[in-house]
Image (cartoon, rainbow, N blue to C red; front, side, top):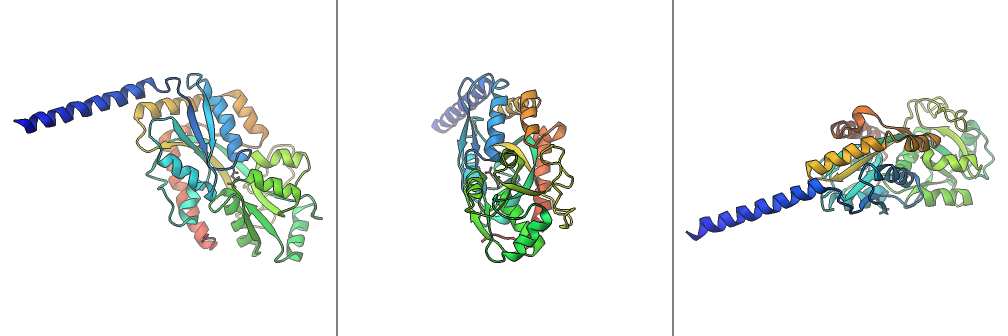
Length: 331
Ligand code: ASP
C-alpha cells in the first residue's frame, strides 16, 4: 500500500516543480537582471558588440537591467564553459563569435560541446577583420609591410586573444599563407593587445573593425588590409586591399557574433529572448552604431534559432578542414 502512495507523492511533487518552472518561464524576465557573459576582456570588440546589444535588448526585455560579465581566458572557452554550466533559466546568456566554430578544432579537451550544450538564440552581426601594426614601422602599404616582415624574420611578435580566438585564427592563417613564422603573444582579449600594439610592445595584430576603426582613425595604429572577400565601404577603410587581392588567394575571415543560452532553458523563455533579439537587431541606434564600426547586423533566418545553429554547424564544417590543412593546431 505504501509504495503506490510514495510514487504518487513523488509524481505530485514533480508536477509541482514542473509547474513552478513553467510559471517562472511565463513570468520571465520578471524584473530580475539578465547577464550576458562576454568571454573576452572589457573594452574589446566582443565586449563592444555585447554592450551595444545589451542596450538594445533592455526595452524589448521589459526595461530591466542587462549586465555584461567579462569572463576572459583561453580564447573564449572559459566564459563559454561558464554559460554551458549555468542554471538554464534565461538569466545567463553568452555572446560569442566565430570561436564557437573554431575552438572545436583549435582547442584540445574543450570543456563543453558547442552543438549540444547550448540553446541558439540567433546571429547578431558580421564583422570584418583588419591587419594592423604598431605605428612605428616604416611600411605604409601592404607591399611594404611584406618587405618589412621579410627583413625582420624571427623578430616579429603578433598579438592574439588566446588559443581559438579570432585574432589567433587570423594570425595563424596569415603565417601559414605567407609562410612566415612570428611569435604569438596571447592576451585575454584584443583590448589589452591593441594597447600594447599602440605602445609598441607587439608588432602586428589581426582584429575586428569594431575595435580597430577608432584606433586607425586616430592614427594610433597602421592598417594594411582587410580579411573580407570584398573591400569595405566605410570611408576610412575603403582603400585597404583585401588580403585576397594583395596576393593571398582565398584568404577570408569574417567574424560573426551569436547569442546563446545554456542547454535546457525552457522553450517559452527562449521564445521571449529570441523575440527580444529580433526587436533589438532592428533598433536604428544599434544598426547605426554597428555600421560606424564596419559591422553588418544580421537579418532574417540567421536570427532564428534553427538558422543560427545550422550556420554554426556549417561554420564548424567549413573551418575544421581549413585549420587542419593549414596545420594550425594549437597545443
Ligand atoms: N577580437 C578578439 C579575438 O581575437 C576577441 C575580443 O577581445 O573581443 O577573438
